[in-house]
Image (cartoon, rainbow, N blue to C red; front, side, top):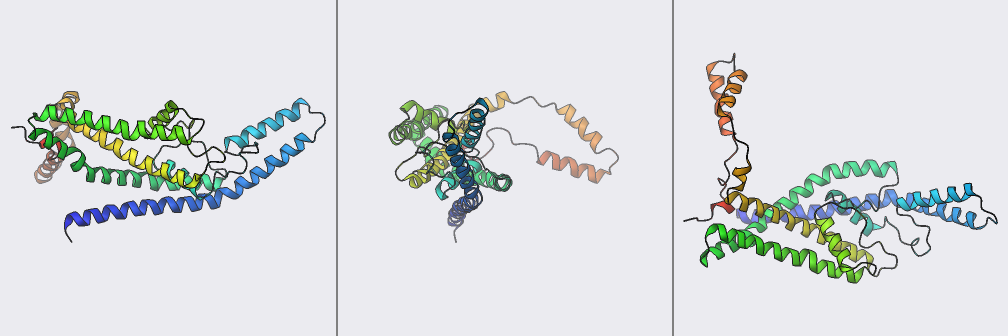
Length: 318
């Protein structure tokens, strides 16, 4: 099989494994946390009935009730009647939680109730976060040519110099991403989430795609939403694609800065005499062959100078 075909096949396998990993996490989180959530919800309902049956409520009883209610609400269990029927640990909600965990968005609106769930979250994120970064990086590498290199070459053929071409391309890419990843989704969120304004939707998009994840706005948490599981899956896809495009934008900016010399301008100057002195002290006492081999390896491992990689920066500058 051709190397390009193998590369795409491997990427497809990574994405499929990523989806399977999310489903696996959703199943385990749901099986671990949903019984605990149901138990907590029943306790809150019983406490509510007991509180309502009291003819005279003293300060201690009121404070005890409020503490229990606020503690349950912190874990996503509400005492309100219209919110009590919605579980935070059904399959779709658990998959949404798993996605926010491995993408490091972490809204914090839903957290594990049990010690088993907390321990599994640590193990799940320990494996899932690096793998998610690997999949996102692999996807960005595949879309670099059609979305970055090819448009820059096209701008050059139209008569622009390489450096202005990269600036124009970066600005166009930024405007396109602003429209597709922030403006359009914000309009959708403000329509689906009845209590959200357009600014709230835009704010959510920015907080999410920057992986800040404050958790004050989380889609799919309002009671009585139609097609809630499908909606949450769509948000998962949006977050993955949005993070991938944010990675692409950052990489494009880095390459543009590298081409314009900003990277080398910001680098600290190297002190060659100090480096040689350090090397001599390190290899002191070793025989000549070992010292020569060490210095050769050190020279080979020196970082490449900016612009030396055969990628975005090697666009014809003649």
